[in-house]
Length: 274
Image (tube, rainbow, N blue to C red; front, side, top):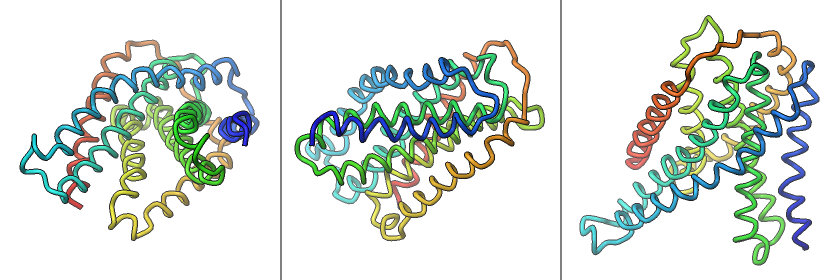
């Protein structure tokens, strides 16, 4: 198969899904802002790569080098290495950067004034990140050595997961602007819930207990339910409006990001003992 065909397998499903969400909304969001949110995820791979270049050597030194760490056993490596990799290295770093796009670029935008906007912009960020992440996998693993079916099986599932986590993050961010909710609890949840689900998704493949209990299958069902219900109720979510508030968000951004970091490490420690 040609390179263009594989690129189509990566991009077209994301564009199709985003198009469906946009068509379901009655009061259309400015397409320029939606596409900007989608495109900004192409930029966050730069800080992501920098962070990964710092985290990976640390994990390799402390969990793979038995000479440097004589207390390291196969059981410790299997459990704790993969739990940290799943909940911190993958889940926190990726969800934190996606959260940064939504919170710093969208949250204070005057067009962000309905619960449905959280779904639209969250889906855009999730799909944008899925596409750029899949490009990396495509050119490094799938394009030359792996059959097309494996790419569809592995990376389309990841795409569905990312759009689901983006929707959850976006709608919780939007909900935090409503007057009848605890603002900071909802803001913390907008980062921590995706971190938990993302980490659980990754760790499922490395945990015999979770894998044998088909957690990955239940997660897949959950992903499709979130996407389906978001599409069904999207017009109704437009009726929940909130006012634009012009205030500084950087203090909140730092506090929420720090809480997300601590939460990911707690999850990594906890699942390391499962």
